[in-house]
Length: 194
Image 1: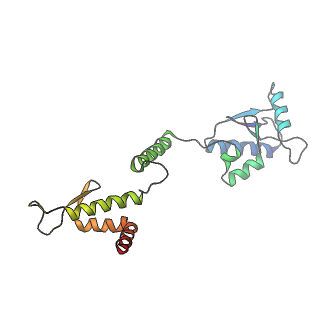
Image 2 (image 1 turned 30 degrees about the vertical axis):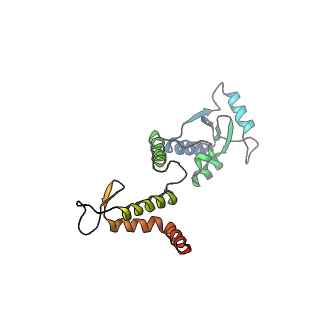
Image 3 (image 1 turned 60 degrees about the vertical axis):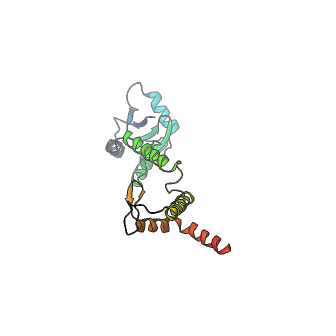
């Protein structure tokens, strides 16, 4: 979609000239692609009629340039444009979407792919507490049933591999407390019932 600015190249009204220049200057500074249509040029009578019939005149019988359209859809006149610019809603006013760079798209898709790989879905970045609790519960059962062998350190701490690194039993206990508090409370309640 192309933003079209209807202007008058030979207007005797200084205010109209100033407004046209300001609109074009702002669009250039915001890197908005637009097409300028000078309704005073020969052969542009149909464009002039289109602008007048599809625009809204404020103070005069006929709408004065600049009038802004997105293709054939009316956006507004200078005052509407100026207000949208002041409110930082120019893209909304012009009915255009902000340009999305390929980098933004690739970063967004990478983030979604990482999320899927970590959790199996895109709805949550946090792992399931039930799954973690079951893992912690099975690890603690293994710790209780393992018999010490000659390679184990004398102090009884056994390195356990978690998250690709090695941690001692003290860190395992801290992690179990963080992730399994909820399920530990349930198991304590179940033991009391027995």
